[in-house]
Image 1 (cartoon, rainbow, N blue to C red):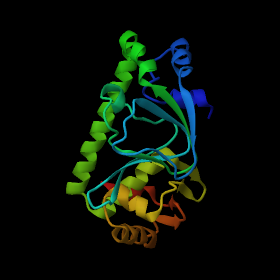
Image 2: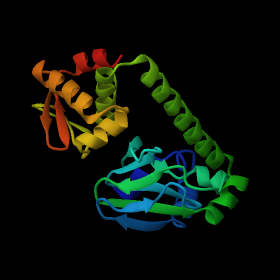
Image 3: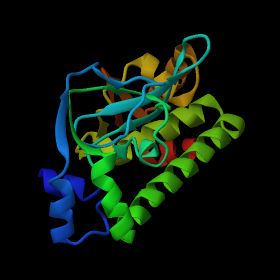
Length: 226
């Protein structure tokens, strides 16, 4: 998919006509991150918004014990850093490239005139913030009401919806996460998550592969995620 089509998936651009899209997107810079590179750390100052054009990037926070909790894994068309546009305080997460990433970057100063003169831009950003709040509420609810296997199934289905590729062998999900990162994403220990994955594999629901899974029984995975 070409860069223009990917950018148009981001909430920032969804309500813009072609002329406005070209004007706003032309003010964005480009940044390339190697796998494992940190874009910014939790607590850093910053006032840029980013859109992922290629690759995968993770957003995480560290607890008092140093353990990391993954809040999101982002792919092409998704954006982050929008909080700094409204509240230029310290970054609330650490952003790290899971794979080699290509990002487009928008400075606060370049976006400010658009927020004043284009209500659809502000509406897109508010939609992004509302979606992030809804996601946070879902995560809290899952931690309270769902067991670890259910959270693992839900996380894999979420990754499948964005990164899955349907083949004659099943739904292949190249999530690119280590077992530890997958555990951080569902808020559980690696041992507990590995046990859940092994159980799913033994039941024939999925096949485990390095940094990926192939979902073989989508219906049963959906049931387990509820």
